Length: 123
Image (cartoon, rainbow, N blue to C red; front, side):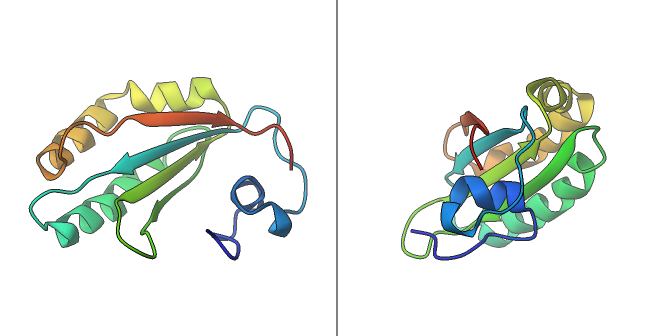
């Protein structure tokens, strides 16, 4: 259970912690929530890759934010990726840069992470 805002982006905070929301959400805001299961205790490698890949993905049109959440107790990482709309997310997801960064991290996963998409409807 989250007890406070995740960061500076009030639209993301509004979706995850409703008592801390303020302002209005863009009508087409898209969130992708991805649960990751790292492999062989290569935690440091994964965190380094995540930070580096943020630099790549933040250059795409429509990018809002990308955060890596660590559970307070046992469990897997969760990545929250926020784009202005589904088309902007798909453009990034179908790009050569996404393919290249994905290839760099595949060996760190048990299986393939599957995103769940959310659309902001209240805030």
